Amino acid sequence: MKVGVVKTHSEHEKRVALTPDACKKLIKAGHEVIAESGVGLTAYYNDELYKQAGASIATDDTQVLQTADMIMVVEDLLPEQVSKLKQNSMVIGALDPYRNEQLDSYAQQGVTAFAMELLPRTLSRAQNMDVLSSQANLAGYKAVLMAANAYSRPFPMFMTSAGTVKPAKVVILGVGVAGLQAIATAKRLGAVVEASDLRPSVKEQVESVGGKWLDVPMSDEEKEKAKSTGGYAWRPSEQYIKDQAQVVDKAVSAADIVITTAQIPGRQAPRLIHKSTLDKMKAGSVLVDMAASTGGNVEGCESGKTVVTDNGVRIVGASNIPSELAAQSSDLYANNLVNFATTLFDESGNLAIDLTDEIQGALAVTHNGQVLLKKD
Image (cartoon, rainbow, N blue to C red):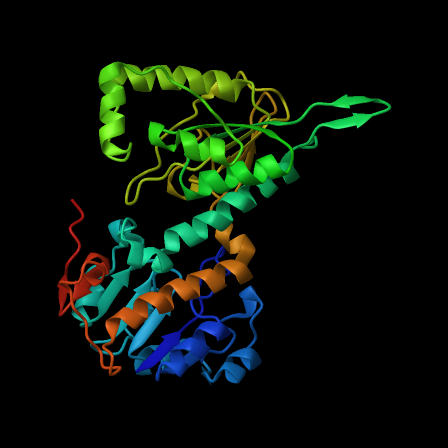
């Protein structure tokens, strides 16, 4: 099978869906690889490295799209690129499926499209395909460095002859993969770190990487619900949400650095921090909003921009943090895609798409001329 990769066109996207090392893996498995010239330059991979890996180089995206049986992407193709796709080919990548307006176009082309964001993350055999986790891990790390760069004071405590410098107070809201990495990174830099999440089950994880859990009083009934579901399917009461908001407001108001990570696939990001809280923060405080591209967790956030409030608080709208670590994030992302692609073939190397498979079936958004994703 011929596997292709083309350049991305977004202003803030530097990653590439297939790195030279990933090409080697595909070629070793018996596939051909065709790459658009210059596809990896923003991730520091030139055409010569792709040639050395065994890939052929195309002068433009048309040659790739019209000849490849499988296209791997970092983000959705442009409309004019979709129309160039080879009939009955495949597209694999982060397609933002719930907001994607091109699924009908893919179906009309007979394309089988797999959206990697839909991966069932609880399956152990799917862990090496999890693009959300691999990218979030790097994003959590980089978010702390971005905050440190924007903050006008150091993170660790310093003992000097001129006086003692207090450590920075960091608050992390949302303790998924990105949040945990942010806690660990801020702690390594010497900050005092607190964290909050609607899932009480992550308290031990927060403490294991050196953070302090922002505790919210719970009724016995709520404790039982949280315990029985592991926190993932737990729906807190209105009183719990209100109490948590008060705890978070107090912590954020006193913080030097705040990093928010909460996102909901296919929906606007939940608003975690409002103007009333921002008004209480100290001048020079920094908030890095990792959900800026989907509306933001912080009131007043603007994607891709840094906003300074009237009281001197900086809100960094981090729109695509993994792209800031393009070389490493591309390596991990490409490995995720290749690991998934291998499941589409049988032991003899023949294509064997099986939508009854719990991974393939979950990721497929178009197949056999039909749109499979239910957006409602």
